[in-house]
Amino acid sequence: MKTSFLLIILLTNFGIIACAPVANKKTTLTAQDLAQDRRTREIILSDQEIESDAYSELYSDNKIKKLCHININAYNGATLITGEAPTEELKAKIISLVQVIDNVKMVHDNIKIAKPSSQESQSNDQFITQTVKTALKQIRTLPDFDPAMIKVVTENGIVYLMGLVHREEGTVVINVTKLQPNIRQIITVFEYAD
Image 1 (cartoon, one colour):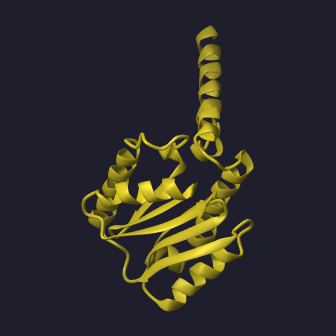
Image 2 (cartoon, helix red, strand yellow):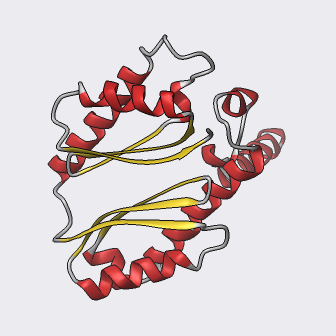
């Protein structure tokens, strides 16, 4: 009887733990996150909400979900949409769905009319992104610069750089990025603080 009771308590506790919601890393901001970013806490959370709402909206549409490869990145309300859509109609639908999301200030449309990129291409893009991020960590000549302030997105070998930067910082970031291998093009989506 005692063993059965303990077993029930143990299973009940396990069930509670197993059903507990997992904290989304993006919604938890640490003091370090805030120290590494020029955006306010509210704007960072707003940008995360833009991304979350956009994915939710886009992938609730079966056609977009099945036929497109789309990435959404928001920084200070500027929203970068990259990826591939097979038709102009689907591309237009994606843009129109994202434009009406709360707090989207501007949409940077970089969707290509093409079939979704291959897994190999997406893996290569991830590698390029990591290479650029690693290179940015080596910048030591800029006071008050933290590489975590730069959002790096790569799609089909094209590197997009987002962030709230000073012009000198932007120039150095672009020059460091240019030195990395396998980059077809660099597009900046910087907002300049000066």
